[in-house]
Length: 102
Image (cartoon, rainbow, N blue to C red; front, side, top):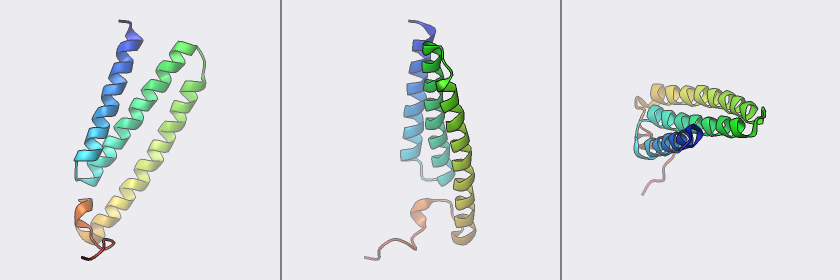
């Protein structure tokens, strides 16, 4: 097995770990961390594909994804902090103002 093949498996493992974290955890900040892990796995794939094609396209897309991930993290943390300030919890299941009443 070559080195890029092992890195593709690492990328798949990182993506699956991030997906598992995003689905199973209840804390909103940990869910954001899982999403960031999935974005980093996608970046690793783009750089590896770029390494195989000998071009610059993959690195430019990876840079774009990093910029989008930073913006997503800033907006997400701002929303979480505002919700924590108002509801005094960071668990999304305990915020029930927008849920239907039975």
